[in-house]
Length: 246
Length: 246
Image (cartoon, rainbow over all chains, first blue to last red; front, side, top):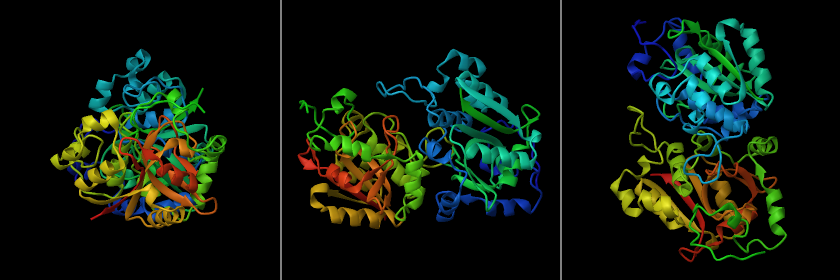
């Protein structure tokens, strides 16, 4: 596999697709094709069957109702935050152009000075956000957000966290992962998890880059590898953010 | 019930909520509270259970993957069209700011001169669109679109159309209806249908005004009444548009 020198791999930075194909040494040769075959698109009948069979899917209903396309190529974290805030019915500011209706958008989520002090929308639009920044932005928005680096979680711990979170509707789970490890072209990415399918040990990612990949069921072990990859902009591993209303 | 003089009731025109409460004489006194109780929000466990039990739900997966919030208070028809086009994978133009990725948005759907010749985005943003305009806009976008006025359909014919369309994934069904007849405040509206639940004779509306109402399961008979209401801007009844790829 060709190794290339690449710019800092914050989530959702707009790398040309051709680079994405040779992005990371992980997983080992042969495993990529296997992993690609292992993703099951949610909109297809097979994906819908897994959804029907899933027991740990309390987050799916509220999140699917708020499903969004990221507003630009670097806004995966922003779209993910907005889905989580709306799905938890966190009190929202007014939305420009919608009269008196109040809901979170990818614009008004940066309205508060506390939030912009963490990271400005201009910076995010240029370079995305890291796991820590995702957690800090959510905290500034008045929810409880706990960032956990992937290399601090065993596979069993990750599975427990996923099942526990997705089986109750009062909390949400965001993942910051590397697409390559789940068999997709691309780099770092952020999206919410919505359901877990025990029989196949798969987890459902509602992918906010909907123009690029559909939502997919991926083997939990692949996603675990994907959150343990190193974000070269921090030198730390990617991971998950657990979000709860205060 | 208070009767008010109201402006032309094209879909999604931005009426204050307080007016919406007294908008239409339909349904008769007493029935409104009943109908309101009869809507079941999709994101809630009861709504998810209906989704799990539904057999006629081939359109749900592709449409839910493309779920959108209408871009302004009058864009219910535009958001609905975009969901349908993306969910049918109709070849799309480029989307500004997304590099080489191509998908339909509430902006680029008006890119073609043929489409703007039917209706300009400025006019739609001001006054929404009628059933006929919805059909004509979709036709201009290269799909087969057949508008059927609600008063041309018996309840049995409407049920047959809904079940037949929602049980196969290659076509879509948009409804232009009056919210009041399904127990909601508001006026004319447009959204796609995604699933039918036989045991309760209910149909699932993926409501593009997500800031206002969640997606709901409504009794088919209520929706049938709602598509038979008269659009005062044309003097004709509302109805459905059946959409297919050519």
